[in-house]
Structures are given as structure tokens and as C-alpha cells.
Length: 131
Length: 350
Ligand SMILES: [Zn+2]
Image 1 (cartoon, chains in turn brown, yellow):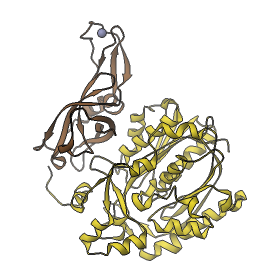
Image 2 (cartoon, chains in turn brown, orange):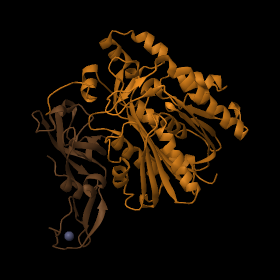
Image 3 (cartoon, chains in turn purple, cyan):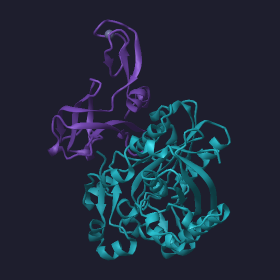
Image 4 (cartoon, chains in turn cyan, yellow):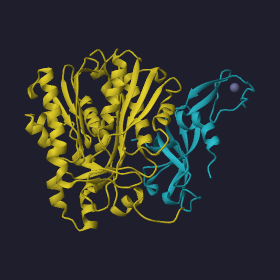
């Protein structure tokens, strides 16, 4: 069961990639946080993440958790975005055997999970080859 | 009219299946399907793509070309026959994702393959009536044909989105006209997974009657003939029908080829003629006149006459072009993968 209230609270991050940028030292946090770990400031402005980046590392999931069984094998990677922010995401529309560290990726809006056949559908970001 | 298109965008999924793959499974003759329907392959959505995800991508492309703040969009209308929920709008998710909430009017439209052009018509009409500065109309579908049915060779996935406004138009709307009658050529009842159609009846009294009548009347009312248009795009249930309609109306191949996507895209239903229009806008020059006629079973056609402005050249390169998405790096899949992607295999939940 997917908590639809938690999913709903995260909509600004999942749908619009809204991050918090420290107005004092410029550090960007995704997801947003209350206190900057760089300068202890509590003042942030909302910024949108860069939507392209480079694959820094990844793993291939062959035995998936419940709800993702149809997608195996699939890749989950850490992507360093062009604004310097690192983000963990599924990487799709690619042959996992041919995926390489350093590959250029871009963000797309996709279905992330659904709560069975009758439950809520959760949307969010995934990454695809940029070419 | 004072209103028109200020931004446009399309989205084509990367996966494809060839006609041969489908024909092989059902013991059908691939060459005769390819010849008869003029189809070679079609787009296939992955399990994580649906009308909402494709609408978001197409809308982001359209907004980038329009160069506007999404907060100023006053309405969003998505036409589709494959809205992911039976009850819960697609439009609110798309509006939230593009950053257009909460000052916005949303509605999901349905009318077989015509839902996209009716969303465009209503969005543009509200701008024309000064109800809002900008409005977004989208046609998107991930349609399914029953396994082995003729529709399985064509039913595909894609989306196109258009931002309407009065300032900074890239295409003016010169005329609109719609033609409707009650015609039971294609339908799907509640709780049925696959649609049904009336076989050969879907041709003459359905598609051709409505598309040709709509095209003839809008040209008559605007005092134009086929020669006055640089481009034309008609609904594309397969490769053959739009080409035959074009010929009957006096259009040459050069006028329809650019927007004729179905041979390698398939029938994207509500996305069909809107995506064809997007491919035309990708290459249109200032002053080019474009005829667009959609078709939806049940039945009706929406006609539009667009005229590209000087601004068209400035926006063409601002987002991925339609044919570029259609032609670059497709991923071909076999029928087994296709059946899994489209949920055609009965299995235990995992
Ligand atoms: Zn700081």
C-alpha cells in the first residue's frame, strides 16, 4: 500500500524538481531541508533542478521489490546534474548491459509506481539517455 | 481571429514494433498489411508511460517554445481515449507538473480520436473570448487494439500540446469548422478493455464522409482551394486513409508528406493530426497556410486553417522536433515484450 498523503506531499519535488537553495552560501538541497549544513543558515529560495546530467554510478536490479517485478533488469543510478546536485533515480529506455558511467542523461516524467490495479498511480522523475 | 498557436510540442515514445512481428504471431500476411494499410511500424509506450506522462513532456516542449510563465495558463484540456483513471482527471496532474496550478480550469475530453482537436478548439476559443491570456490544448493516447485485430497493427502512442494566445503567435488561426453526425463505426463500452469497430463500415460512411465534408466546407467558407495551402494534415488511422482523403480533395503528395507520420508512428488516436501539425510547424515558413482536419469515431471532424507567422522560425529549434523523435534511435521490440508492455499477458501480481 502506497501512502497517498506522503506521495501528495512530495509532489513539488517529484513533479517539478523543486529544490532549496541556501540564500547565504548558494548550496542546493534536494529534497529541501530546514538548515543548511554548509553555513547553518535557515534562509532558502526555491529553485528548479537542472534536468540533464552525467551518470556517476549505477547498479542493475535483477531481483526487484514488490511492484517492480515486471521491470527487471533495470538500472538505478546516481546522476550528477549540471547544477552540481546529485540525485538517485531509475535509468530507463536503455539496455542496462550497455549503460556506462559518464553517460549523459536527461530527465523525463514517468509513472514510478502504482498501488495495484485499483490504487493510486504515482508519477515522478526518471532518467533516459540524452543523446 | 485574434488568437492562435504561440507554442507547440510533441512527444514520441522510443519503443517500436514492426508489422512483421505482429503478423507472425497471428499467422497474417505482413506484406499485404503493409501494402493495404501503408504501415511499417508503430510506437509502443513502456509500462511507465501513459497519457499523463506523454502530455507532460509534450506540454513542456510547447511551453518552452511559447516562452511564457506556466502560471499564466488559464486552462488545460487533455483529449484522450486512454486517460489513466476512469475517475480522476489527467489534467490536474499535468497542470501540477508544468507548474500551472492552482489558478486554472481543467477538463479531460473524450471523443475517440477527435478528443485532442476539441481540446485545442475549446482552449483557443477561451483565449479568443478574452477569458484568459493563455490556454493549453493537448491530444494524447496510448491506445490498444485487441490481439489479432486489424487495429493491433496501428494503435500506438504519442502526444502533442499547443499553447494558445493572442500575442507572439507562431501560427494564426484563420478559420475553424466542425462537422458531426451520429455514426456507430467504432466504440468501447464501460468496463471493456478493447474497443470494437464496424469493419469496412469505418471507411466510406465514417472516416471519409466526415473528413472530406469538413475539409470541403472549411475551404468553401474561407474561399480557399487546395492550391492555397502549403501543407495539409488529416487524421491518420493508418497510412492509407489520409493519403486517399488528400488526393480526393486535390492535394499533392508534397503538401501532406511532412505531417504524414502514420507509416512509422501508427495511429496515435487523439494525438494523430495534432502530432502531424507539430511536424509541419517544425519546418513551416512564415506565410505558409496549413489545413488540419481531425476525425473521431462516433463521429466528427474538427477543421482548422492555420497561417504561420514570422515568429515560427524563432521557436522551431527550441525543443525536440517531432520527426527527429520519430526517427532517432528507436528501440525495436518483439511481440512478447510488446504483449508484456501493454498488459496483454495474464499473470500473478508482483
Ligand atoms: Zn548555506
